[in-house]
Image (cartoon, rainbow, N blue to C red; front, side):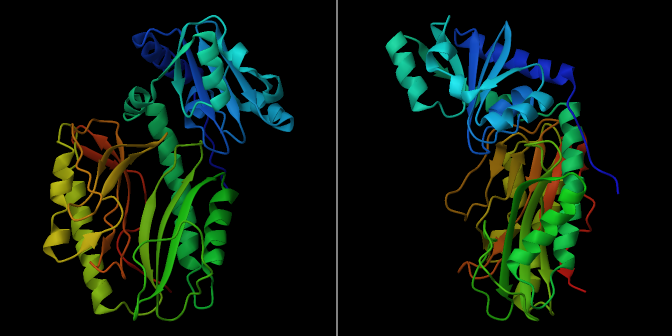
Amino acid sequence: MTILEYRFSPKEYQRRREAALRLANDVGAQCVLAFGENRSGLHVTYLNGWAVTRAAWLRLDESGCRMWVQFHNHIPYARRVVFDTEVLDFGDATPTELLTGHSVIATLGAVPASVVLAARGAGVELVSIDKEHAALRVVKSSEEVDALRLGARASDIGAAALIEACVPGATDWELLAAARSAYTKVGGRDHICYICVSDATKPDRDVPSQVPEGRVVSEDSVVTFELSASVCAEYPGQILRTVFVGDPSNEYVRLHEVAMQARHSVRSTIRAGVAAADLVDAGECIEQAGFTTTDDLFHGLGMGYLAPIGTSPSRIPVHRPSGALEAGMAIVVQPNVTTTTHTAGVQTGEMVVVTDDGFEDLHRLPEGMVIAA
């Protein structure tokens, strides 16, 4: 069995750090503080590769990079995997040490209250560069695209296993376990795996749940899922499919036909230079067919949930993006077409990377509705 592995180069990390410090300089700062906690800390991950476990505070300036990690037993692994970072115990971190030597500091992520209070007391101005940094991450480098390709491969492996597990008697917990087991065996990491199990003859929900609810697959079930696994933290693929255990009803056939029409239309519109809003217009067949959506029509992904983000016009809240597509953007096209009562819905779609003349499809799982064997 081939294990999927990828490590970013020192050149890639240096590019990221230099870009972050340039953003800091733009707001009059020479130091960047990045914060993460409880498996949520992409800014830290972006700058040195640490997939945040508990609390992590990172300080970057021209002299180098330091990071304080909670707990002490997490430090050995952190020291093995991070790029060019002095790793210290979080118990030894003090807000004063973070702030020393600067009157203005740029921040990334949610700033802890203790740091905010210490900055006020020391007369240090904290300036968020989150918005500017998100814009910086929208277009991927060649190394980032390589990481996304492997994330898509891991996601496809998980999706294939989930589909195979869709048999009468299986619970949504077992479907989740099948997916996670499959991609974990090849080196994949968890990102998301949302699952919906409903009765196709009397459906009662339109989008997958973020956590299994103990639903059991029957001979009349329709299973929809949205799955993302990664090989490098924060660089997942994303694939969405609809699985019918029995024969799909006419309503579901029509929902899926419209979803596939919207998927094809949006994908056909993608290329560098196209207005992002044109992708919204490309999905107009959804409302024309008398349906609506609950989820986004498309969104950027990879080191964050990023622009461009677009919804169909009947989805509330509605979002119509500005700007144009650029080569290197990673976009998930995912027309989740639902009834207007939101009692039935389908999932289809996957991640692509924008190119000058179209897009690169990162996933290899066959398109279209799936009829369980």
